[in-house]
Each structure stands twice: as structure tokens, then as C-alpha cells.
Length: 209
Length: 209
Image (cartoon, rainbow over all chains, first blue to last red; front, side):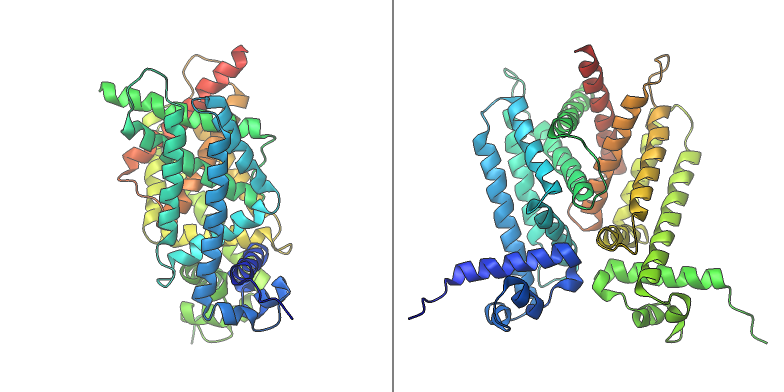
């Protein structure tokens, strides 16, 4: 007797196949039939689990976000509290993995999906939510690395988190599409530190005025 | 007697139509016939000027780069030499225009084309060249704003230009796809200053070691 397929696992496999196709060929490469074949399932499987293109893309978006949040949470958990170097090092190492698979495909799919979602009302503002989550996590991360003994400055932390998310987004795009050369996570770590410290210096300066 | 159409102008119009379609619908929205109709030319016009899809996309890439370089050059020319605030202000104002048309469509088309080019050997590494040009222009810009009286430090200038191009790329992506809120060019100008100053501080620090 055949075991009933695990529905959740099947959906994950289909979304991973869609992510692979988005990364390799862009939105043009994604059809229900091509996802079936990429995943190695019988023709019609994807249509059974995801009736519309919007539903399939929503599934891929949810999968990317699930993996992103898992990575970010793991990075946060792995890092000792209050250690500037180790937190930035962890983030930088994670970002550098975007240069290799499977993270590279996920990053490329994420950019494709962000672009698709921005022009498709059926997909809505799901990425606005993700950016918000990235910034919340970055705020928590930046908050950990504030100088000891100073009162917490929420406005500064928000600015630093915005700058980190924006710089990292630009870097990940370049890395995922072969438009950046950076020799090591150590170099990226220093840029992240520079961005955080530069925002703090200008914040302090602006307060004086 | 009908005037012979201006070939260069006709090609520009077709490329502008392709840019519009890329921005509005992504790579899936671009076919020769749809470019004809978007540009308001008879069916077959695009196929006459650009025989293949790769040729059409190469035309669109060249057009985006031509407009980018013109904007960047205008910003450089408009800016007094050695005035930190005015150069950064000009760059920031230019970047903020990515939130409105026609710059928004051009930015979205640029991102689409960067992604297409990265997986299409026929389009080659044209954007590697553009990133190089952006960085050269940024290097020139950053060089203008070095502290007076200090010897020129080419390595520092390269690092600052890399950081500016990366941060701006991340910001433009967010702005073009509705993923960033920033109230004014003044705010962006301050972030650019923070990035440049932060890289300098860490560069000086690293030299001491």
C-alpha cells in the first residue's frame, strides 16, 4: 500500500522548484508544468496544489520568507550578546553565502518575487512586511551593539537598521548577479561596521545643532 | 512626399517602449509585437530594427546606460568642486527622483535588465562595465570631498565609492519597488555622508593597526 504523500513536504518541494526556476530563468521560466518537471513530479501536480499562478507565487514567497527568517534567527541565536564583532561577523558570513548555492538562488528568487509582487495586487504587500521584519531584526541586532552605559536611543537604532538593511540589500543584489567582488566576509563586516558607526556619528552631530 | 524616418530616433522610441514594458510587466511583458504597439508603430517595426530578442534587449540596455551616464554627468557638472554638501545633495536629489516617472521606470527596467543579462551569455557582461563606470564616477565624486591638505588616498576612495554605489543600489531598489520610505533628499544625503565618513573612520583605524 502506498503511503499518502506528505502534503506539506510536497508543497515545499514545489515551491523550492519554483524558486530554482525563478533564479535560473526569471519570471518567464515559471509555469505550472515546468515546476512539475523541475520537481520531478507527474504533470498536473503543481496545478493540483496551486490552482493559479498567483497562488504558486504566493507559495514561493512564503517559502523564501520562511527560510530567510530561519537564517536570521539562527544568526541571532548563534551570536553572543553585546559582542559587536561576533554579531557583525555572523551577519557578514551569512550574506557572503549569497555568492554560493542554495542561498544564491534564494536571493535571486527573492529579488524576482519582490519585483513581481510590486506590480501584482493579488500578491499584495507581503514584502513590505518582510522588509519590516528584516528591519526589526536589524534593530534588535544594532541595539545589541550600542555602547555600554549610554541610554538607548530608539531613533538612532532605527536609522542604523535602515542603513544596514539598505546597504546589505544593495550588496546582496550585486553578489547574486555577479556585480560585486569582495574578497571576504571580513571586508563586508568592516563595511557594515562603517555604516553603523557613520550613522551614529552623524546622528550625534545632528543632535548638537 | 513623406520624410524618411530618422533611424536613430526610431530606435530610441522602440527602446523607450521596451523600457516602459520591462518596468510595468517585467521580462515577460516584452515581445517585439508588444513593443510595436506600446511605441505606436506598425506591427513589424521592432522586428525590422531588432531582429532578435537579444538585440532588442541590448538596445534597451544601451539606452538605459546612455540616460544614466547623461544624468550622472549632469550632476557632476552642476556641482561646485570641493563642496561636500552640494555634491551629496545633487546625488541625493537625483536618487530620490527614482520614486517618480520617468526615472522610476528606468530604474525598474535597469534592475530587470541586470538580472536578464546575468543569465544570458548573448548579453554578456555589459552591466559589469556600467557598475565600473558608476564606481569611477563615484570615485571622482568622493575624491572631490576629501579633506583639504591630506594626501590623496586611492585605496580609501575606492572603498568609499564601493560603499556609496552599494548603498545607493540598495536604496534605489527599495524606492523603485515601493519598499522604502524616506521623507526627503536631505535624509538620503545624510545617509550618504554617514556611509562615506564611516568608511573613512574605519580606514584610518585599520591603518593604525
